[in-house]
Image: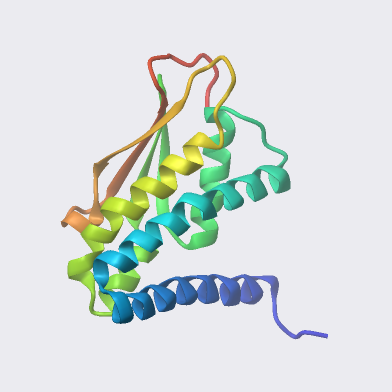
Length: 172
């Protein structure tokens, strides 16, 4: 029998996940340089979010569309340790992030100056892939955009998710 709470188990796996992400990046960077490591990291983050989104969809019994994407994003951000709020608007929803654990790790490891460059590629790629996994037939593609970024010295990140060229009727 394991004498750990479910919260402790989740924390263990969250820490392992973030540690392995940073560790493999630094080892590739050490051997091949920063740009090569970032290029490979982008390749990983074109695939991993597909796996994550499909897992969350199955676990939460979600379908397609912005409404279910919002539910999945809430779950993902909570599990990864983000502090955020979500605001619904006429054409989709915004996520306002006040604490980003990935940026915090970059700062803690003394690599804050690289956070913006990594975010430029990885954050955009990851969230665009999540959006694509919730494409709703007949409703158009879901677009991901950023307005503000903590890694660029702002107080918060603002993510926009919306249908491309289509107003939605149902609420998120």
